[in-house]
Image (cartoon, rainbow, N blue to C red; front, side, top):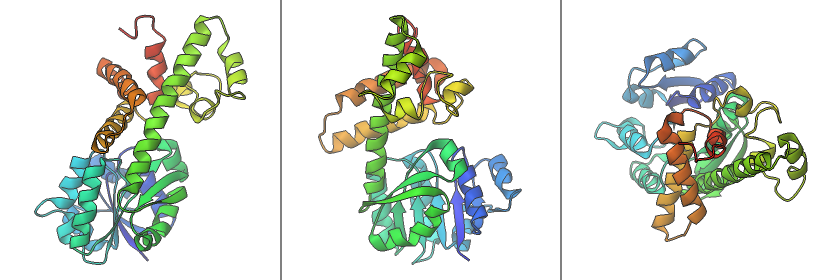
Length: 299
């Protein structure tokens, strides 16, 4: 049996661990929040009192945390995980972080003979709970094949995006598009309503016309139109607005590194920054419609 160490038991990590347990893996877990550890230990995970202990017990380690700095602190410090994970073991980073840090992690893992893939996810909390996440994987073909059985326990679609860092590149570009399309859908619904068009009627038309997109037909920001979306649950995430802002900033950073213009992405990032700064960062990112619907831009 493959023994997995899992670090980061938040909104995504918690259900991902549960799906690994359901698939029969032995799972050691670590988080800075004791309550998060207990929430999965009661269902069969094994608590690790340190990253060092978790690494020493595991055949493969998964991280699912929020920032590149957190991943670097876990892996690259003097007494970090790469010091204790034995040569030949597998490391899977499911965090959504900057390309620069990911490339550094791959280089350092190679130095100590650790196999690594970057494997950020798409699908949100609902996808994590259902085990239907999409994984975008960067790394060698052999390391991808090693990670595949583990990722299949947590996801429905696993795509080998390319070499080291390609998973993060795919995630950054995908969420750049997602943020732009969500704001576009919200603007269209807001204008339609102010022009006197019933939202349900507009959805009926646009969802079958050239304006159709995932943000409209699978994640509609207007309540009462489609089922099982955050807009029907007071915009409880889902995917938090502050996390969308983080990903848009990652896109900005990535674009700078390759001198690529993303003017729409920059504008959407400004909108989400205003929304988050008004105290709405914990709402789902589709709640940006509430900001756009106000006449003065949310002030």
